Length: 106
Image (cartoon, rainbow, N blue to C red):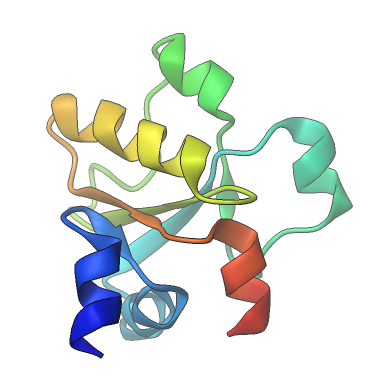
């Protein structure tokens, strides 16, 4: 368990940790994949905002409600980039290591 926490690092969560936050109602799941990936399937309750729109300046949902943003993509690379971007804008944002691949295994 300690090793898996070390691997996630600051600003990163495992799929199990993300599930827990969402079940508590303290977070919003934000899928940053592109439209075709989103349409192919996404996590129940997730909101969609592609990384391309975030980098163009789009605001993220849920920030006004004071809820943590949990970002997810296919593998975890784009969501990590999106989380860094949103944290730089002052949001409480983290990403899911392993992305949808890890989410599906949860």
